[in-house]
Image (cartoon, rainbow, N blue to C red; front, side):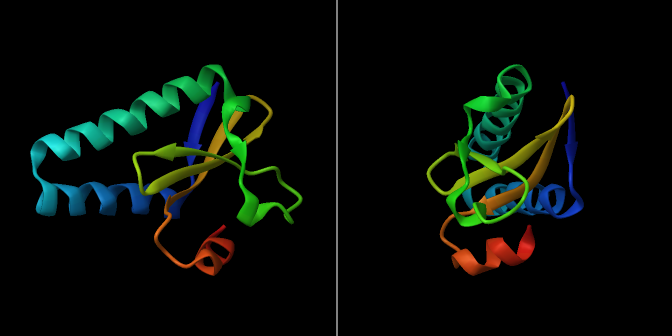
Length: 102
């Protein structure tokens, strides 16, 4: 299965990694990047394992999510043979920001 990132999701992942590097050090950043990579590998094989994202349930697309660490969600949907990453969401943010972002 092919993986494509939307522009905002890619930017949020990059900015989060930059933030981790500045504030938590190299090892925490490597751990975060590794967890993201491992989740993507798993989702490529088993895209149905993510849970339906409750904040986006009123959309015509079935958005799914999976947790990354304690504070983040990787939000995605599947179209044909493509897994599309729609958002990398910090769960501490206001929920209405997610609905505007996706």
